[in-house]
Length: 211
Length: 211
DNA sequence: GTATGTATTAAACGAACGTTTGAATAACTG
DNA sequence: CAGTTATTCAAACGTTCGTTTAATACATAC
Image (cartoon, rainbow over all chains, first blue to last red; front, side, top):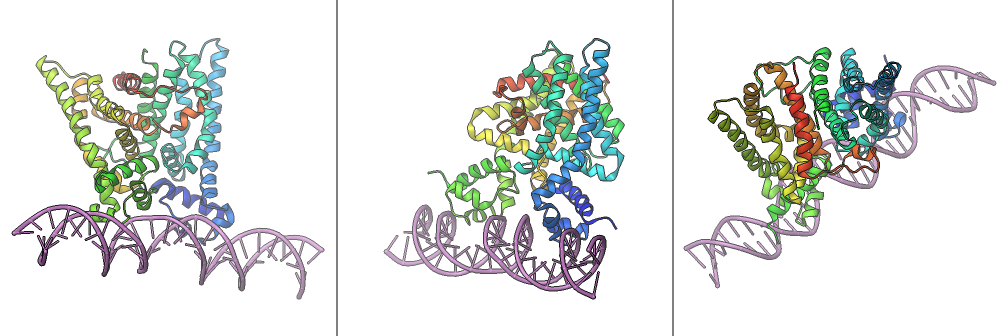
C-alpha cells in the first residue's frame, strides 16, 4: 500500500487531467485514492497546495530535462562556432515532453494535465505553471534569435507562441480528442515517435517561414 | 434598456470568456446583467441552455461566413480548372475569425470564448462547440487534400489539428496572455491585420512542409 | 509503561451553487 | 374595461463544495 501523500497526488493528477482543476472535487480525489477527505488539507494545506505539488512533482524534473537538452544545443553550436538550429531548439522542448508522455501511464496523465495548464481558466494553476515555464521560454527565445537572425524578435515571439499552442493543444487532446471523432473510422497514430515526427516538422516550418 | 434575454447573453458571453463555463456562476451573470437570478432559468431553461445559446448566437453566423469563403475558394479554383491553395483554405477559416474579433468589443469577448471552447474541460461546452464546427473541419480537409495531394490524409489531419491548436491558443490569449508578461516591456501587436499576417504564414508553412 | 508527535477518522461547518416556487407586476388581447 | 398570458421578483430548496474540528490510533523515544 502506497503512502497516503503519494496516493493523493496520483489520484489528483489523474482527475485534474481528466476534468480540470475547478471541476474536480477533493471528495472525488480522496475517494479514488481511498483515503480520508481531511487528509488533503492535512498533507497539502489546501486544494491549491495540492495542485501546486501535483504540477511541481513532474514539471520540475521535466523542465530540467528540457533545459539540459537546450544547453546541449547551445554547447554543440558554440563548439562548432556556429549558431544553433531552430529545429533543435524546438526539439529540445517537444521531445522530452513526448517521451515523458509515453514512458508510463501515470506520466501520460500528467502530460494531459500540462496540456490543460496552458489553457486553464483558473489563475491558481496558470500562475504555478507559467512561473515554472518562464526560464524555458526565455532560453528558447534566446536560441531562436541566434538561429534565425533575419526574423525580428516580435515575430519570433509570436511564432513560439503559436508553436506552444499547437503543442499544448496536441497534448490536451491525446486521449480524448473531439477532432479525431470527426474523421470517423480514422484513428491517427498517437504514439510518441509519430507525434514528434508530425509536430516537429510542422512547427519548424512555421518558425522558419520567410518573413 | 436592452431586453432581458439579450442582457443575459451579453453578460454571460463576457464572463464565460473571462473565467470559463464552470467557474462562472449564474449569480455573477445576472448581477452583471442587472436582472433577476431566476430569469436565466425562465428564458433559457438551465445554465446549459444559456451557454448553448451564447455559443450559437455568434458561431452560426461566423461559420456561415467561413463556409462562404471556403466555397469561394473552391469556386475560384474550379473556374480556373486548378486546385485550391492551402493558404486560401486556411485563410477562409482564420480571416473571418480575426475580423469578427476586431469588429466590436462584444465580439471580442466571444472570440475569447471560442478560443476557450477548444479546450473547455466541460463536456457540455465541447459538444455544442464541435457539433457546430464539424462541417467546417470536414470542408477544410476536403480542400487541403486537393491543395496538397502529395501529403497523406493522416498527416493533413494532424497538421490541421496543429493549426487549430495554434489558432485557438492565440484567440484565448489575446487579452490576458501569460506569455506576453514573460517578455517584459514588449507588447506585441494584437490588432486584427497583424495577427492574420503573423498566424497565416505560420500555419501555411507548417501545412505545406515537405513530408 | 508513559509520554510525545504524527497520522487518520467521522462529523460538522459555513458558503456558494443551480434550480424551483408562488406571488406580484407588466404587457397584451378581445 | 376585464381576462389572459408573459415576465419579474424575493425567497427558499436541496446539494455540493473546501475546510475545520476534536477524538482516536499509531508510532517512536525515554
